[in-house]
Image (cartoon, rainbow, N blue to C red):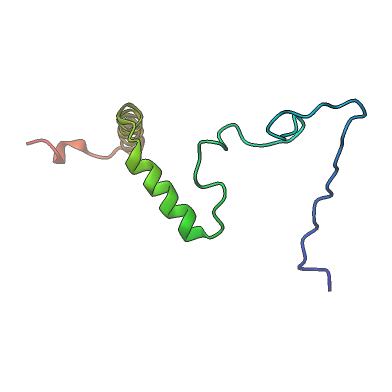
Length: 94
């Protein structure tokens, strides 16, 4: 039955009448992500290979400013949350 099968998207291949292709053969009408050329995780098939590629990328180029900014944002949000639920912060200080 067709209850559990997903619909496949229709493909539309449009080539204009007076079209000159690029040297590399890519179409200007092709929709792709902005950073496809720099990412290693695009071509991998399995979830494990994607995860290991992401971890490798994080190890190669650590962005300390972004990590510091994320930690500050998480700390501020945590303090706001603790203030909202009226948690007694005096247990951390003597």
